[in-house]
Image (tube, rainbow, N blue to C red; front, side, top):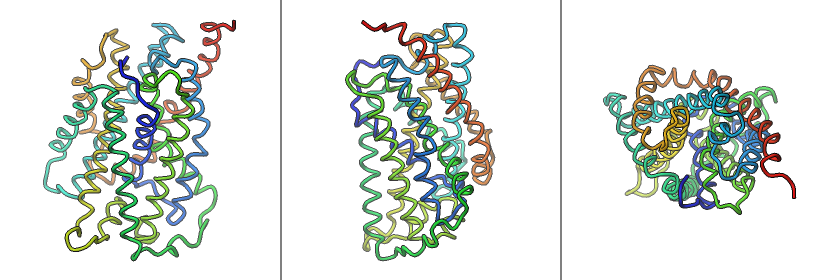
Length: 361
């Protein structure tokens, strides 16, 4: 466990970053001008899951996710839950690595082999993960502040080219289509916050998990919706829906005077930093799970071999950006056991076990 406790602000910033990351790789946007409604509904659809995550961390405030599993189900029984969660963290890290690699290739480095970009990104991820959760928390605060300022600046400097009529007609799609799109987006943006349970044990003892999770998710979803509205106002529903990286395209149109006509370059760099931050958390989670299975004392010693596994999986998981976006529709269902079912099993076990560990009186 980290010796330095994280502040609620650090943890909320990390939650916000995890959610905003989903606004960049937007191949799952299918309801055009109603996408912002789907984004807002993510918080409602995944609210039960967020409450489950918060309750688990409240019942076991000083234990991380994998430690809780072992406490509840014993060394042998916990293997059947720790192993799939560690694999999920491993594969999710590989998917994120490849997503941001494809983004980098498409917007800037078209002639660069993807594996070279993946290696550079992974080295950065490994460095941040190696520093521990206290550094990751402070880093998240900095990056979250920078991206929030960037969002405000791009909105202010794009007011002259925005057209609010682009969101009309509102609710042009059926409620079923909007909810379906919301679930797909939520599996990436909100459902993946399940991995926050590996770090919440590092919060200060007097800080409620609910007061970290709920404000963080609400702020993250709110910023996500603001980004989508900005993109729609600038590009229009058709172009926003057809463009695979509409966030980058929308910002690219903005001109901030003669000296800042390429503002999208700085924005793109910040978005890559968002991805690196999220990957550092997931890589740490995968290494922690593997360390628990191998009975290793320090998960940090396993970060490099885990990172090599991520590189191998990331190189094979799909061939191009089009396959990457198609994979979203598979991922939303494949992630259900890890984002919903396993946490519910842990929660039920925690409700039974916790009163016995801390009897009243």
